[in-house]
Image 1 (cartoon, helix red, strand yellow):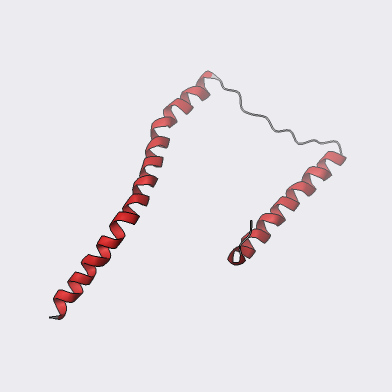
Image 2: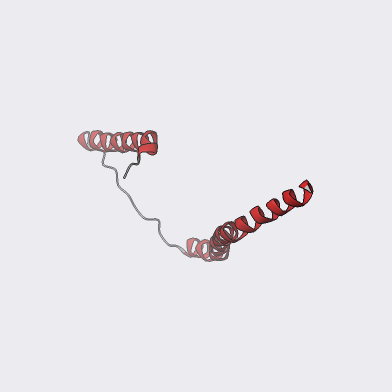
Length: 90
């Protein structure tokens, strides 16, 4: 759903959808159907996917870590800054 502040983004997304549907319809009319295929899972592809697992998990844990640090560290940082300002003013 589009919010009031996201109007420009929603218009762009709707325009992209319309362009894609128009392209799909036009190509279908001339006999050129768009077909979507999943890639074949060969041994090499499986190996790459297997090697991507640690990096993907690490990136996900890092995002959770940043989120927790923001919620836990932000109030502490504001208190410390206020303490420094208070101590410097006397």
